[in-house]
Image 1 (tube, rainbow, N blue to C red):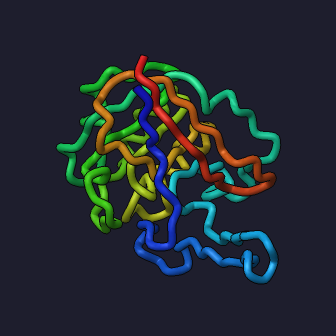
Image 2: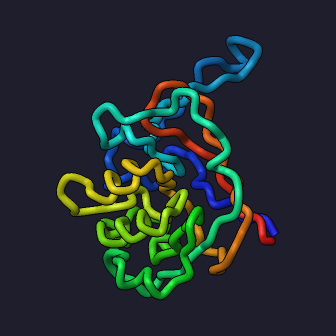
Amino acid sequence: MIYDISMKIHPDMPVYKNREEKKPVFETVKTFEHDGVFETNLTFNLHTGTHIDYPLHTIKGGYNSYNHSLEPFLGTAKVIDVTHVKDGITENELIHHDIQENDFIIFKTKNSFSEKFLFDFTYLEKTGARYLVEKKVRGVGIDALGIERDQPNHPTHDTLLSKDIIILEGVRLKEVPEGLYELIMLPLNIDDVEALPVRAILKTL
């Protein structure tokens, strides 16, 4: 079975903290009546919808999408159901799950069951991020438009990105059961930026 875990891009989609400047803008620039063809311009923030963060997002001088390899974005992934967690996912929560070196961990939380932005979204707390670094995972995904909230100086981002651990934000997991999957996520080939939109899917093994 194939699960498309990407957010659909449209003008009224949920965006981080409902900020107007993060909403995608569609502009019709050619029509059949005037031009014989139909064309649309799309303007949106690279952190809108399903996307990955590079270290440059929160670390000054960190690397970005320049010459990035696709290899880390392919392979198996573990979806971990933490829908019972109401606030931050901590180390104490993670020690109860089977997390191994090189795993790509994707957290399914209460966030996947809302079509609106949740200001109290479940996030990865800094102790949870440190635990995942100790486990040497290759990537972390979450069904929120941010992997952390209300943490001064974004320690979750910095902890993961400083160790070249991929951060995948904005996935949708409502219909996805906990388990092991094949993950395929292909970022757009945009050079020299701190984040990239991705189309991400999970395939049952």
